[in-house]
Length: 176
Image 1 (tube, one colour):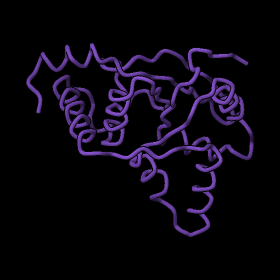
Image 2 (image 1 turned 90 degrees about the vertical axis):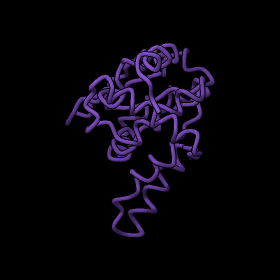
Image 3 (image 1 turned 90 degrees about the horizontal axis):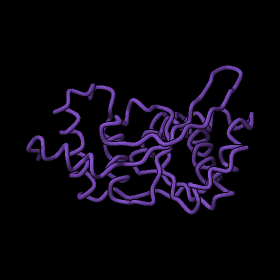
């Protein structure tokens, strides 16, 4: 197993697609090595309140909701609030995507909010399975961990926000 010491004492922001797959395969233990790496590096997991919304919105029964909340509790995921300042930052990020003609139909408001959280907190690393939601014009994908579930290959991407790229893109076009 890789050490990934660059993760030491970081806070990891889990994307919706990641926690959905981690729950889906939780009985098979495929994600155990990933969570072991987090523990060995003293990482703390968190999700935005919008990721929480996306994760639980499809619950049809109280038991299903209970299962999902138990899973989040088991991985000790702290829920991060979304103040207005973060929403405004997410709008600026979305405006840059629009200006660069990036397929914004795929990039959700939650993805833009996650990017705004990365921008605000330097010690935050995004964990996602869907790198298309976080274009490299503003993000750095600095590592990948692969999990083979026998049913599918999952590539867990580790991303950060690059403030210098954001500033340059902001200067190219007047944004809200």
